[in-house]
Length: 105
Ligand SMILES: [Zn+2]
Ligand SMILES: [Zn+2]
Image (cartoon, rainbow, N blue to C red; front, side, top):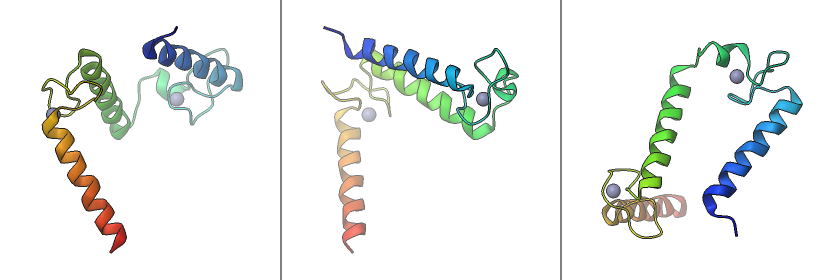
């Protein structure tokens, strides 16, 4: 039996191989990779747009907290089986309810 973590790692590797084969940058997946490389020049040089790097930092933080069993929003202990704590889950539920209402209106 493979754990969820293994699955994600495997998925990441496979995706990486696909981009590599296609000659597409495995980092940004937008630009062509440089010949013989898996990333484009921009990614290779580390020239990322600000929003991209913020997004990546958020993603890293999210996974770091999730791995530790912390709420991905506020770092409080997460509820079992969830990526957020009880308080943030209630907030999310409230958001969802409000969004539903907006759509219905
Ligand atoms: Zn790139
Ligand atoms: Zn929280």
